[in-house]
Length: 377
Image (cartoon, rainbow, N blue to C red; front, side, top):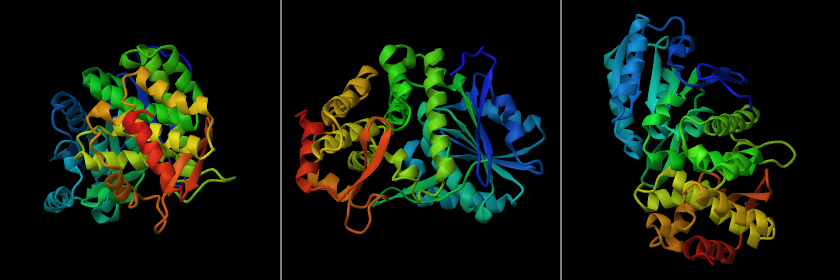
């Protein structure tokens, strides 16, 4: 990746039936108006709590372009992703007379992006949405690719739709106010992209683990851009997760580590951050692939080494989740979106940057992989 002056922005183009740009850089909010539909007169501003200064900057940019702003504040984190929140948003849009030429702008983390995108996807069967992700996790994962969703009692993201944004603005200045634990958690999704597609991400992290924890560093910007590029490449080829060519799992590859991760999140009442859960899920599935004879010992071990280098959990005890029983986690994993009937399916690696699917693994292997992530053996 090229070096950038502070004022420079990188533009990653997402092709396909509904093309859009992902803009990455410092101070890029002045490009917000360019991403909105030309005929829009109203914007519903869906935002997370606790980021008032960031939201004010977006609001001022919208008002400055003569747009009427409808505030749609959302609850914090996964609490935003419920049917009740969606219904309240729809009622507010209806009362405001929101039309198909208007737009939604989301400002916040992954949960805000998921829910704001879902509201945009379902109102009048789809209105434009522009995402302004404010967390590392949202920048490299939730804001790009058009997946929207909410949770149910049975699990995470089981209700949703595909609705690509009209644009995404990743202003790296937002990361300066992000709590350190949230920045670390976001690196779980970044490192995932390294394992499934771009090993240079791993190399950057392994060379300078401290630097990627600095929001202003060129190293963090590089891995952010690389991770977004990975997701863009996968999404363009397989928007609706129907599968890739030549045995590649397509968009499903982006779910590497997520089967266990979602079970851990649900089992802890979403106390464990998504990126932390993904880190645990990757350690689990790397061990599963090793036990199944699919992955070599060194690459399996590299997972825990790279993740631990930036402070991500590699054992359930690291996040006080070692009380989660195997049988409970297994029951949740059985309703994972990748499952087919009664058969569990896991994205695994056959080698670095060679994702594949392991279908119907023997329960003894699953238990052994669970023991590994629980007890380190």
